[in-house]
Length: 90
Image (cartoon, rainbow, N blue to C red):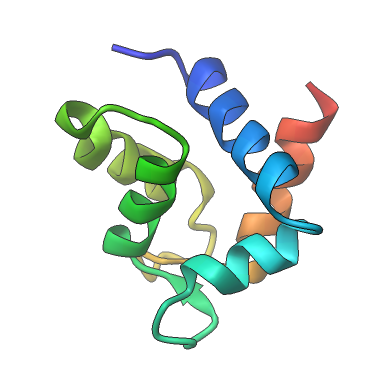
């Protein structure tokens, strides 16, 4: 199993290499435009970050558990930004 640090590092690389800002990355993966990333949208992000399909579901669940502050089982822009800020300072 990949460590949290490895997963977050892969996400950071994806965002910094393919998007001009973290907000652009969030908008790209927010396919339905509702301002929140669902589990399936997070799985798409993880796929693009080259996280193995075998563990993508588990990792997406853990990311939601770790960063979903309002308990709606989705990641809002504010929650995404907090996560990205945490990644960027490591």
